[in-house]
Each structure stands twice: as C-alpha cells, then as structure tokens.
Image 1: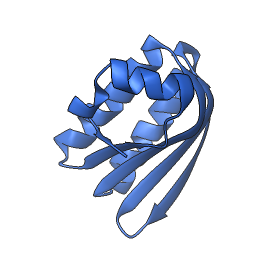
Image 2: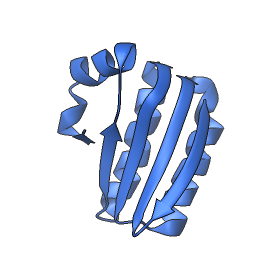
Image 3: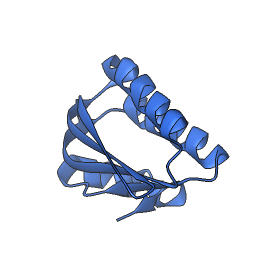
Image 4: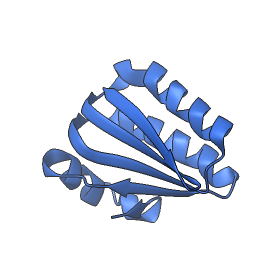
Length: 100
C-alpha cells in the first residue's frame, strides 16, 4: 500500500494506492498517528488508486475510523472503483463512513 497526506484548512486527505492487506498494518499505524497528531476536523480517505482491499485492511480502516470518531472527526471514503467499490457497497460501509 502506498499513501500520502495532504492537509488543507482543517482537513486531512489520505491518498491511498495499490493493494491494502494485512501486511500494511505499519502504514495504518502511521496514518492513525498522523490523524491523532494533526487533529483534523475531517479525514478523507481517497481510494481512487486502490486496486484491492482484504478483510484485514478493512478492519484497520475501521480502527482508524473509530479513533477519529472518538475525537468527533468526520471520516470520508472517496473515489472507490472496481473491486474496492463493490466491497464498500457489500460491506455497507456507508453505515460507518461518509461515502463520496
């Protein structure tokens, strides 16, 4: 998994790419650390370049979301396509994230 951050006006965008799997736990810890450190009002996970997400990565996204929500931050999933979009729909992630 590749990831990069962009911070603007109280928002933190996390651009993700490649395959998101259990092997990416360190990357998710870095993302969580950035969210907790920056304390943005809104966190946007840009999934446009993500090709695959396994169940472990989905669980890690939910852990990151839970930590952000605890601090009253909005968490958004944006740009999912293909298999990732199907997973977002089948897993009913709209119940846990704002989906754009």
